[in-house]
Amino acid sequence: MDKLVITGNGPLKGEILISGAKNSALKLMVACLLTDEPLVLSRMPNLADTRFLSELLASLGVEVYWPRGENTCHLNAATLKTTIAPYEQVRKMRASFNVLGPLLAREGHATVSLPGGCAIGARPVDLHLQAFEAMGADIVIEEGYVKAAAIRGLKGAEIEFPFPSVGATEHTMLTATLAKGVTTIKNAACEPEIEDLADCLNAMGAKISGAGTSTIEIEGVSKLNGHKHLVMADRIEAGTYAMAVAATGGDVLLRDAPVEGLSAMIESLEKAGVSAMPEESGLRIQRAEGRLKPVDINTAPHPGFPTDLQAQFMALMTTADGESTIRENIFENRFMHVPELSRLGAKIQVKGNEAIVTGVDELKAAPVMATDLRASVSLVIAGLVATGTTTVSRVYHLDRGFERLEEKLEACGGKVIRETE
Ligand code: UD1
Image 1 (cartoon, protein in one colour):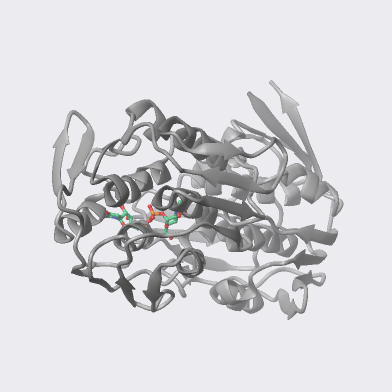
Image 2 (image 1 turned 90 degrees about the vertical axis):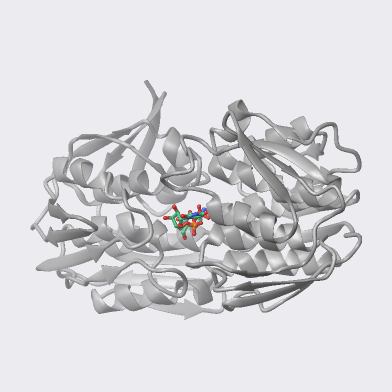
């Protein structure tokens, strides 16, 4: 198992090229199931999660051509071998569940395991299933599997989500492209990745309007064609490096950062005293000498502050000059980084979905453990500002979502070395 050894080394300076967005890439890959023509995705991030999904797609019969280390992935679902996605493959990553709708829309039936650790309970998929039922699918849950059938095909429907779920919006949109008639999604999520998916589907021949707003309309078509699509750049990766520069000080250009999707974060960074200036080629982050100001944040669906940047912002606030309150409103258990940040000397008190962070003068290095994807990168940020050498173990969590993290930081002067335990 790999670990990262991080030595605080002062300000970061230089340029970081932002990779393709993991959360967009995963849904775009699934779109290949909707057509018997090739879908080619460029700026594909080489990540454990995207590689893993390519294996699942291959097991369904998709021809995948994606040489190691390359950023263009060719997917061809001309013929499918099966419409069953087994537990061993779906349990590892929740986004794998998104094969259900496209398989159902194309083949009229699909059997897909419920996602990892998710009985219909915490982090459920009930909204996804309700949408498919509204579109005329028969759904049964048996032995941990969702068995869905629509013998006479799916029909357009009016669907209103009780809250804007990203996954349910994307999954419904994918599925409705091949339904008969018009599907309307109300209270849809508005994340930029949803627009990226709609752009790709429209170029494949779908008829989707309103993606990126809270009402999306999808007029079903009988067939989709192949396409070559450029995956949008990753706003969460860009936001993470922005926070790293804000924490260490310095001056870094985040090349290709999708600035429009980062307005809530930019606003919070500026309140903290960090300059985040959009430029033609990306976003420049600069922080001068002196302590950061404390800033309160509330995570919320887009365009609010993204939950996927909450842990990183908390790491930033650990050395601010005063007290900040961080409220997590999307996931109930997303403070797993708190005990690890505390090991580095951070002062954080958790009360329900609120964390009160009292800034300290400095963090001190310690061995810490990655617990999940975004939590673990907050430890890297903290390690970069701590005095001494911090080791972050279990970095496989990081490898799920950050492409060449240590290389990108090292190019800007960060001392981050990967070691195999
Ligand atoms: C996606 C992102 C994830 C991000 C999240 C919120 C991907 C691969 N993942 O996750 O990085 O943190 O959006 O921006 O794109 N819920 C239900 N029933 C459902 C679906 C969701 O109750 O059927 C709940 C979840 O438990 C959670 C909340 O809704 O509390 C938000 O989930 P959702 O927006 O669906 O997130 P994901 O699509 O899973």
